[in-house]
Image (cartoon, rainbow, N blue to C red):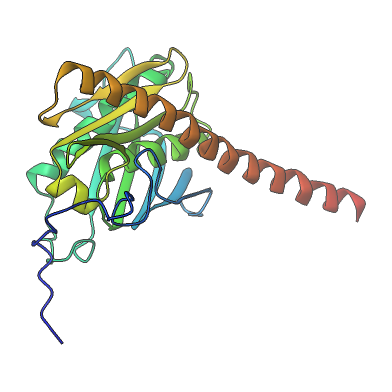
Length: 254
């Protein structure tokens, strides 16, 4: 059996039939599954499968801030802890959080703060713990999306959900939702997130090369993808409360 080297990528990222290597069209999302209320010991939680990404998010709070000097007297704080499991990538990741994990933790926090009423919780903290069990491109966008769901599941007052997706360019073509191979071997990567209460971008990062026209088209692709992902978020929340309502109705009948 030949040795497979994961760091070697194919020369072409499109098949002869015009499809991407995983069979998707240019503007097609990977399969997405979301579920809330998956962890009993957290105040709120969510699980997401997005392509080969598998991610848990747990929310705790409002609770006392440790260390105390980080507390703010006029508002609460949001602390995000993004971690990748040692087995989440092909080559074993070091257990200690690296610089990239700290950066993504900060990015996720900055994306979520605009939708939270932190001024209602002075001197306290909300903490979001995100664990990536399996990673395959677009983890920061997937983590923003699942963290917003976990906050909603915890009953934290929010102006709206936050939805994120990465768009980009491979082999000269603009695409939606880059996989791990497309992210590493492609020409451009544009992760972005939207806050729905004002429909403004709370994340816009860019790595690679495009012209202004391509950049504008990428934002159009992202806008279309946001709506599809948002519906999946809403369905996950609705499903939980429909189940609670049905369980309550069965109890009343007994």
